[in-house]
Length: 83
Ligand SMILES: [Zn+2]
Image 1 (cartoon, helix red, strand yellow):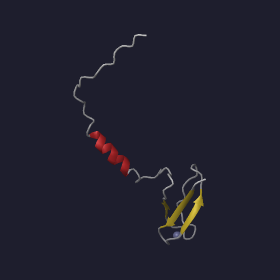
Image 2 (cartoon, protein in one colour):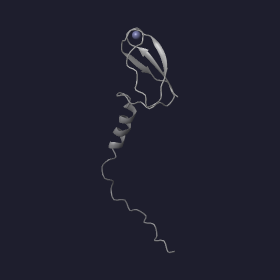
Image 3 (tube, helix red, strand yellow):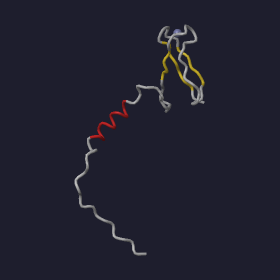
Image 4 (tube, protein in one colour):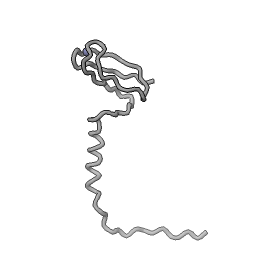
């Protein structure tokens, strides 16, 4: 079961929570009921929240440059198989 680390934006309280992937994320600090944020470590957690798709958008941006139809290059047609 993955461990999620949270940090409070209000009181800087940090704590860890054992959660399964299906559990809802915590949003409240247990100390002050303030807003908390997840502190991500490099454990390969799937980020469901917004704001974590920068690498994806960069990737799609570069791929959009080659979205135009490629010039008809003479493709070497494979010889028909004669079984
Ligand atoms: Zn707090």
